[in-house]
Amino acid sequence: MSDLKHKILDTVKKDLAEIETSLRGNLSPNFDLIAQVAGHIMFSGGKRLRPLLAVLCAKLCGYRGTYDKNFSTIFEYLHAASLLHDDIVDGASLRRGRPVANSIWGNTAAVLVGDFLLARSLSIATETGSMKIIRTIAEVTEKMSQGEIHQLIKKGDPNLSEEEYMEIIERKTAVLIQGACRTGALIAEASNREADALSDYGLNIGIAFQMADDLLDYTSDVAALGKDVGSDLREGKMTLPLIYALKTADAGERAYMKKIIADQNFSVQDFKTLTERIEARDGISYTKEKAAIYVGRAKTALSVFQDSDIKSLLLNVADYALDRKA
Image (cartoon, rainbow, N blue to C red; front, side, top):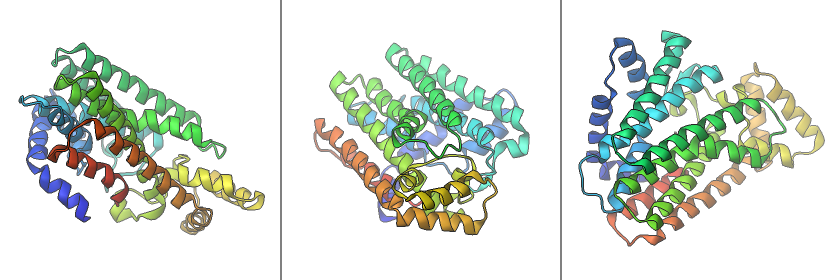
């Protein structure tokens, strides 16, 4: 565990424990199957980044109530629902180092439990009594679906542009983190200026986290990653390191790389060779530099707030986007 991650976890230990209690208490499954499938995806080592950010953003805006942990579960349920559906669409085999839920209970059960978690998150949103929060959650779910569809349309397309990649990750990943941060501000009845600032913070940190996640497919190992190395590529996901390398490669090298991309049964050696080409064409360093830009934007968005321990913690979370190893 990195020093930065250790520092963050030590600081939010109490918040995370209360979030965990709320996640189990709010699930309210009527059938054992829901508890089993939802528990498999939700209680297998997730970072709880999204609910934690909702809680921290509420605190930053002066919230002193007792319902922030309850409402923060909206974003973990939405996240878990998207993972259950993603693993089916992508044909994944591992998630967080464990077999994917649909490989155990089947596709039908995984889809239906994902639907339940989505509905549960919307039900909790209505309990806030805030149309702004309900609208935020509705917009997040719509944009996430658009991102998934866009990614499906472009599956395995070696001509995917960087601009389209950015559109996909913003909708598929970043808007959920953005929604968590904005909802934290709304729960605290923050000013529009503060809510917009935290919304910007969440969007930019979400983009940076996804870029860092895309890097891990080329720089990590199975034990650290919790899924098969190269799984993104095997699932047809064109990510920024590869997109940039293809853009900067010469014609012959590009043709060779595209040949590997087109073969879903590429070998370990093929993937190693592709990774070497990506590194040689600065795909790794370019992605790190782009992610750093978005981390910088996220930190700048917090400038509207006075210095405090919570603000420092949120700045550390932004830095962790680049520091993470899994």
